[in-house]
Image 1 (spheres, one colour):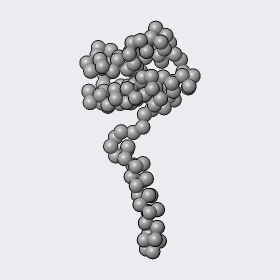
Image 2 (spheres, one colour):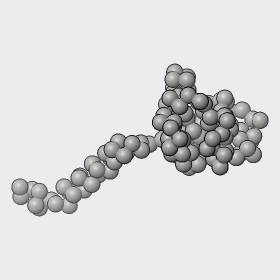
Image 3 (cartoon, helix red, strand yellow):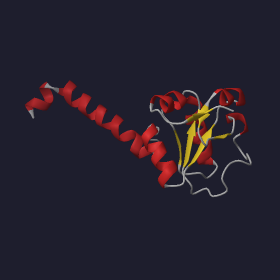
Image 4 (tube, one colour):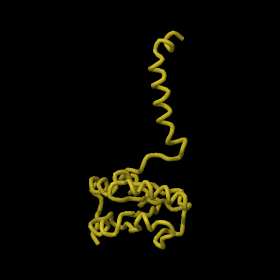
Length: 133
């Protein structure tokens, strides 16, 4: 008991850090997907790759097989799959818009929508195929 009293700061730090580690699991908002996990979902789970970049960015280079649905046009877009059970891998140039888009898609009923961490930069760094329009 003396240890806890004398080292209250260490105990507090351990409790806070444990809480921060558990928070994503408890709120259902985990970290974004890495490139390898995204490819696994696309190949093994018939995942759909959606790029929420603007058309000009998409034309400069995008992941092979990606559907371009700009973030502002996401809700109700005809290119979204009708099967809401399919995994959706959402990407953009950096990953910031993709995270917002994944949240919107989850509200629309696509529970398996997740953002690609690092966006196109991470995709290129993983030496994955890129196309130009």
